[in-house]
Amino acid sequence: MNGRDPAEVRIAIVCDNFSPHLSTKVDTRVGDWAAANTVEIAHTPANSSWLNRIEAQFTALRYIAWRNRHAHDQRLRAIVDRANVA
Image (cartoon, rainbow, N blue to C red; front, side, top):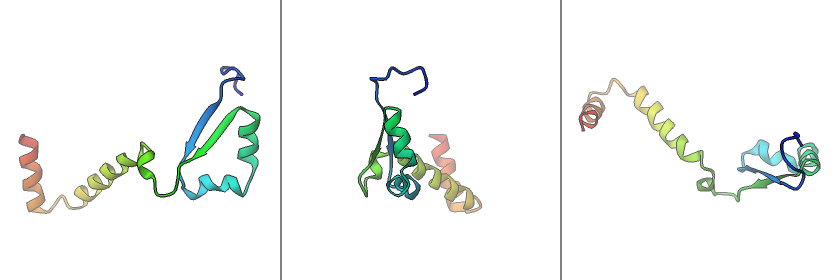
């Protein structure tokens, strides 16, 4: 594969059900490359975003974006100020 990994070591790439990840079922180039390089592409089941460890981070980012859009809200500012003191 890259000279660093022994041929008997398989590398797994876990993909969620994001549509470009599923394109390997239509276009075999990625699957062919994986088979030739001891790489296994594993797709998570549908409706299982909890299996994708990065998904939890998106919720926090959405909250931060929402909070920044509403930073002028005085009630929200009071809550954030109280939380920052604690």
